[in-house]
Image (cartoon, rainbow, N blue to C red; front, side):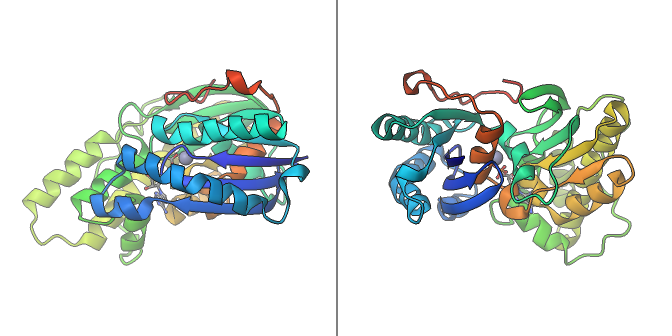
Length: 328
Ligand code: KG4
Ligand code: ZN
């Protein structure tokens, strides 16, 4: 089965055709990130306008060699995300579903991140699985008992992991998005003895995290230490976030004893996190981490998720939901 996936929840306009939830036949992407570099963060209105400009060319691109007649269904992100951006993908997908007479499958963006682990995978993840979705707006631990059976286990009480990268990068005057900028700067500094910033809640027995204290600690440090070394602080920030996520992941795996551990979301592109998670969990569960291009927002994960959770909905009944949760 060939599914056209459409993703427009934030600042990326993406379309991809994926066969049987695994094989990426085509993939096209436009991003308004350049615009947001200038402003140091996303302006939702601008992101939505850019989505409108890009959506048709991107879909055309993804269908160029395959042809619309050869796809079996259309999948689209209906939430969570920025309402203006979501609407562009959702309304376009509804129109195409009606015009081409193809089934329409609404996809939860957070759940779809997890399915990045099935794309081009040498081995299929086995259930039960514990997944950690770390993105710009979410830090969610979930138990996946089978396809679509998802239970929330814990997550951030304040800032998400990606948000912590983005906000602290701003304090260091590093470019948006903060995660990649911090990771590039951090690589210029040795990884030993990085313990400047707190790892809040690592010793609490739940799977909750908190990153807003890190932002305050970094702010105070930069005020008190003029002429600080950016690369050093970047390494300290990255290590504090990574250590917290690793400690909680160990807790999650020890508590639920899953067959697989699935890392997902934009922050899972982080090299240090990938290395430390793989090492920490290697004897406890089979660890899956998407290829970096499928960690950050993409449309292939939307199509993959729709294949394994194939529930078409009449186009009229699909509506964008900006605050959709991972359990829905
Ligand atoms: O999943 P994603 O692409 O979009 C959302 O659904 O939010 O995640 C974006 C987040 C941003 O906060 C960005 O800074 C972070 O992922 N990110 C990274 C890296 N690449 C992207 N964080 C740390 N290291 C990276 N290499
Ligand atoms: Zn995302």
